[in-house]
Length: 405
Image (tube, rainbow, N blue to C red; front, top):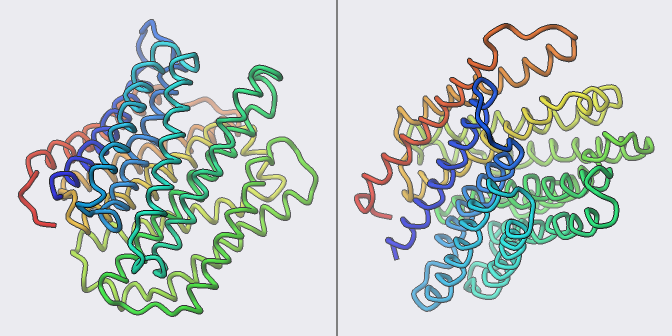
């Protein structure tokens, strides 16, 4: 049982290692002459990061909390290895051909396997867990994952009828990303946080949870309109999207009050784990505040015209909120170990990468030139981030089987 869990976690972080390597390679392409299609590598990088590291990290936590049972292990293994076939297929096909026949086939198969996992989770989770707040959050998160897949399914129709230059092409992608990041993954991580409380016997007020849960879900659904603001839609879209962003901030405040993190949880965490949890909290506050800002028409226009702001926001969410969230929970449940050197170097690489990306967006907005060695420094910082992940990965391979779960 433990070996299965360790194996899943190591494969998940292997995908992060690969994605980070591809990301560093993309930065290097700005300062070297290599005959390769940049866009193809971007596709491979984004798919392996989101569907490899994040999806497997989340499903590993879900497996540990709800499905770690010998009676269903064989069926789960079939789903797990089917997922690996689709991921390896994407990892090979995207760098070679971009969005084409084989990459589309493997991407489609991944969606189908993720549906099977969702069905498996809902039908095989023991009954005693199904009234827990954590289960409700994770189940809703998986529903958002299924909902997000409307985007990829629509892309095929859009490309054959309207073409990739149509606004509907980008809208389909943004729809997918919104319900992946803001729905499935963040709500799933919050569900795991509730599981920490429930397994530790810590108190959670039912009325407070219900209020938080409704506000957050209403915010998730309405903030999808923030992804449409680059099209200059009617004013009502700005209002609804902005209201949803404010609801998410209120929900986050209610979550903190409900859980009483410092009083109930701090004493159960190591110093490093507490640092990680505080970092996640700070990052998600900034993320939600940025959503509110993006609903202001003037700011929405600036963001739409400056690609680096969008890239910086996505990296803030993925490398910051989500990846550190996964690191924290995998460390807390003793599935992976976060070495101090790896943590500090990861934070260093993340912070400086974000500073450089947002700096570039600000400079371009002001119509000023970048400093001369910008791309070289960005490449170096990206390599530092990659090396930190490589160290975390290598460290955990050495730790395999040492720690008890």
